[in-house]
Length: 363
Image 1 (spheres, rainbow, N blue to C red):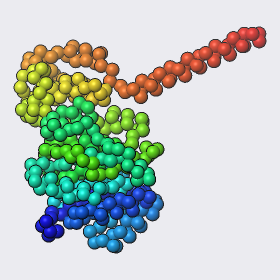
Image 2 (cartoon, helix red, strand yellow; image 1 turned 45 degrees about the vertical axis):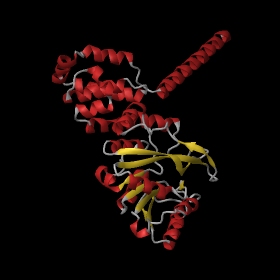
Image 3 (cartoon, rainbow, N blue to C red; image 1 turned 90 degrees about the vertical axis):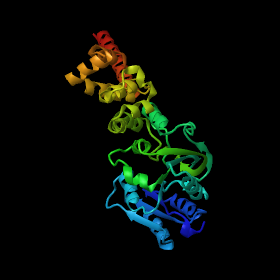
């Protein structure tokens, strides 16, 4: 296939202080066996020399476009800026500290051209350290057997199941669903995958063609600390799961994603919030249980809804109260913090008791 017949691929990326890794990243793009691409990188006001390095590559190759935010704004805003400039038929997402295998783009274009019903192609990754040494593969459980409905169920009950680096999307799908949610700091990928799956079918490539860099000190954004993990699960996951409430308006779609819904009552579009709440409560993850409880609470707070629910399913307010009493929905970090406070109290109490005994001996 000549370059003139090749669809344009927009590689979109963001950068913040990746001075050390940009040359390796840029060379991996330039070495692609597929030649009809454009690279759009937005810099988030880096404080190192990475922006200057990026601009030096722009001067050498007209396929490269380097942008910069007016101020530091976070990765979502930064990557969205690159998205807006994309002109290709396909969009491929990657960070400036990661890299491609040489055949990455040609493989993905070939697959998507042959599979027109697929809107997004995910793939396995190679893990890479600071010195560009590979350390095996990184992927979730093999997902080839799942269509969008099956994967949406897993994403609802288990959390994020998809990998963002190297994901390959039809531009028409991007035009339909928009860009990353700029209000999310840690779960923007999770949110975007869910929105994609409500609008297109996925496919999965078992051959790793993208190198994902994992810092030894876990300093890159996706290497969560305990605190940031808890924050994202408690706060942001609620917004991600709201996509299900917004997108599922018909019982037939609900039952396609969640076949177990038949256990909770009859087919009824009006009861979809109730059904999603009941399903979420069955999750093993506490923050998803919490979403289920709050969804159920919001629905049943309306007296008319509670009466309708009772008439249709026999589910009573006292049944909801039982759910509240049986489900411990706060997170392990809070439990740990609580335990530590109790330990501090006990240690303080012991010290005070010893001081009291010492004072008694003095007098």
